Amino acid sequence: MDGLRLQSVTVAAIALLGGVYLVRSRTVSKGRRPPGPPGLPLLGNVLQAPGKVIRPLFLIQSLQCVFLIGDISLAKEILEKRSTKFSSRPTIPYLHYHVDPAQVYWAFSKQNETHFIGRKLTTGLMAAVRAGETESLQQFEALLNVTHLLDDGGKNWFHHIDRVSASMVLTAAFGLHCPTGQEPDLKEVIACVAEFATLSSPTASIINVLPFLDMIPGSMPWRKRAQTHRRHEDAPYDRLITRAVSGDASGMNTWAAVFASEDKPEGDQRRLMNMFTTTAIAMHTFILACILYPEWIPRAQREIDTIVGEDRLPCFKDRPRLPFVEAIVRETFRWRPAGRVGGPHQSTADDVVEYKGREYFIPKGAIILAVPWAIEHGQERFENHDLFQPERFLDDTDNLKAGYETSVFGFGRRGKFPLCPGIPFAERSLWINIAAMLWTFNIRKSDEPDPKTGLPFKYDDSDSAFSGNFTSAPFKFPVVFEPRSVHRAEVVRQEWTECEKDLNVLLPRHKEQ
Ligand code: HEM
Image (cartoon, rainbow, N blue to C red; front, side, top):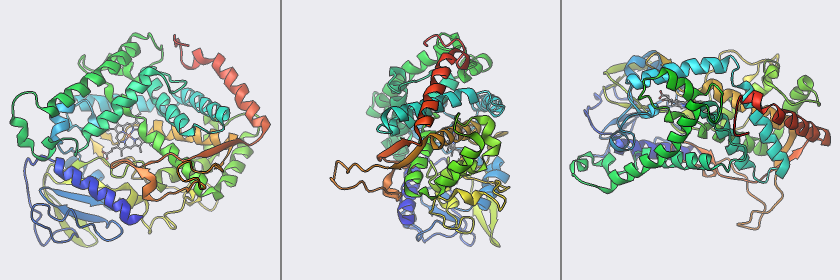
């Protein structure tokens, strides 16, 4: 599997190479090259994958230097300690000049004023998340999720997880609560997110490979495609932002409303529309771990039952007393990271980095990609790295080990702000949903035969069970969600009835309810 994953990473890197517009091409000085095979003309060594496991630092040299990092200390050294030199983004011409010419998607934009303002505001919003502002909303959504799973025994569990992940973010961001997952606005947003993912890929257009073609005047197919996408995106976004700002849909202090009141008038908050897919991937991954490595589940349920009892669902107040659930969240992020590679960083100055007694030259303009899968599966840090073992994050006294570090949310800082500003929201989303599902259900394999083969379904955690070039999302698989007792099912129903009554408190002045 290591080889396959590496292949995906290499494909992604190759795609990125194709997409990078050469502002300035530099060669790594011989004598100080990081490990990497000798290059072929033009393609360099991009096609020569390094053995079975990514080395701590690996150079792919072609039209552009691309460094893959598979070691956490090296990633921190380069991307965190030296973030002033390594926090820019490479330019993907089609994305930059056609799909997102206003550069409203920070994840792809170089640091500019809009990006700076957006990150500053998001950091403020996430301080409120840390203080618990969104917890009642996240708890309410987790309760609705287990209610849905009770209703159909998990038949549509994949959809329910997609729904809860999207609804948590879209309610907080725009006041768009999605109780069924079939809401037309949600469907439109999902279609836009998928279209944007396709168009932002370095392989999306010939312009990324041959940028000079863009000098051809007139209505070329790539221009029309990008214009159509922008129209597709503007329609739902305009509706979402109008509702969020006017308070028609919700009186909540939505993130979009905060942005609109403090950002420049031309500020654009559409970046908030697509921040739910990685949470859904992580939750699907958690369910796969329940199916393939169920050994830890009794311990988790014992911990939850001891603290929470049988007469109510877990809530955020229980969080400090449920370290094993916290360890499950960490192991979910580690075991199969949602992103195959972190966001691409581009260096803005030449630098020399020392690794294991040797110095390596990283030229200005090089692209640096941390590879979470390689980092999170480092044998030195994680024994039995391919197994799902949450207890690896606990010490001998069953408390969380100190010094937790992860690569899955990216590295470094952009300007003054750390990468992935959504960490506090994402962690809470996962924690409450995992705790609620484990309290309510026994989660097990389905006995139904696979309709494609007529044979028992083959559950798989190899690379072929995941899709995506830059993300790594499990394909659908059948799961049974069995209530642990009739009493627990009744408690869920009862809590939901109470909660529905309080919806106006949870989502104040939500006029659609
Ligand atoms: C499991 C959940 C999540 C994962 C694994 C994840 C991971 C990441 C990663 C790897 C990056 C790129 C960092 C880099 O450049 O190295 C990123 C960027 C970002 N994330 Fe997340 N994220 C998650 C959830 C969220 C949520 C829930 C939000 C918002 C509420 C969010 C907001 C953002 C934003 C705005 C950026 C762009 C930051 C920038 O480029 O300035 N993320 N995330």
